[in-house]
Image (tube, rainbow, N blue to C red; front, side):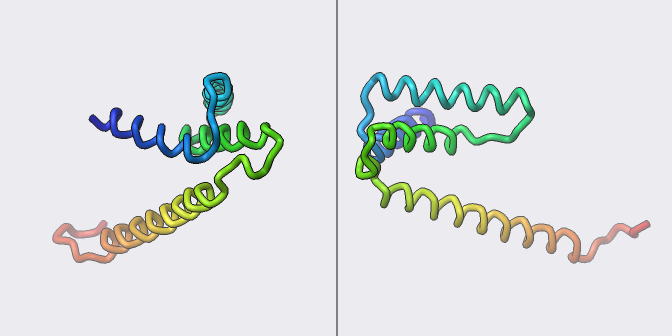
Length: 109
């Protein structure tokens, strides 16, 4: 079910970002897989979502027009990524503080 929902949602988002033809979609997927394969060979932590987003933007910019991209949608995605980083950092900090400052029944050595 999650795969079906993700496919439907991502299909809609990418068509809103830039006009995608079958050949452009193939090149976007191919470049994404190449970047992930090379990054994995070097042990780099990479995100396939970020990689395909960059490939989609690159495919739109390769058209030669800056207006080919939906800049507002890319701005919303970027803001979402930043908010996610800040939120997860705060949650991790709160959980760390709770784990280190709550009283324990076990004696510390």
